[in-house]
Length: 235
Ligand code: SAH
Ligand code: DHB
Ligand code: MG
Image 1 (cartoon, rainbow, N blue to C red):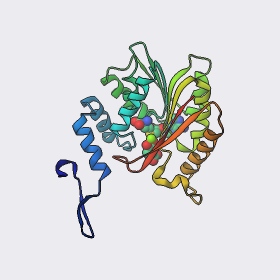
Image 2 (image 1 turned 30 degrees about the horizontal axis):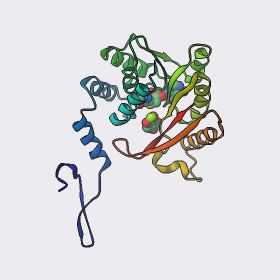
Image 3 (image 1 turned 90 degrees about the vertical axis):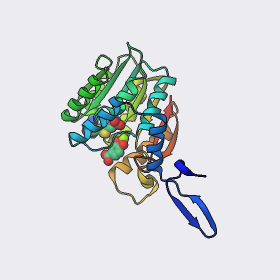
Image 4 (image 1 turned 90 degrees about the horizontal axis):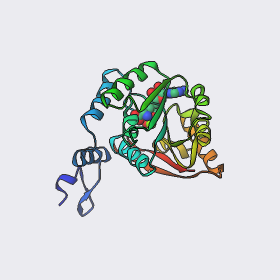
């Protein structure tokens, strides 16, 4: 029987008990069964909501995936582009050793303030450096430093290709690049789509395909954040 795992039932022709899954409800179920979020992460999401910020942070399961990727990469240096309230930041920073470092770039000073408070509540202020400004202006200062083990690109979508170019420059061989929001409800394949975010993602995919150092895959996702996807790239 479907019982707790069943979120909705559909009856097709003579076949009953064929279940049409509800990805959002299933995400809630996984979050609950696996206890994916602790109180710090929940408070981080709530603080963003209270500050009137959009709920565009990664889902809890996706946040956990970022944590796991940083863990398997044995990352000690992480770069994030697009902080918002620090939700993905906290997931990634939790994978780092005490002497690790995460630099997160955020355009909006209000977002950065909310994020810093959340990062402090998470006990990660010594590990995380939130820098305020346009990412494209902040990235050159990172050149020449120790390379990053993992870069998470999740800011203004039209600039994704430029951020990917910087990630190629700043990431060590064998390092990981994750690019969020590549699928956007499938709009990425619609050639008539004129949305500049979608065009930005198509341009990024073409650039990824042309880069001999990069080996990448696009994974489509459903769940709490609807139908989207991310690119996972190893150098
Ligand atoms: N990574 C976050 C979500 C980021 S939302 C999480 O999953 O929790 C995208 C963020 O990028 C927003 O906070 C927005 O202010 C920021 N942003 C937009 N344009 C930017 C730019 N040019 N440079 C840096 N940050 C930018
Ligand atoms: C948007 C941005 C994101 O990073 C995301 O995960 C979802 C939506 C947006 O700008 O609409
Ligand atoms: Mg995103």
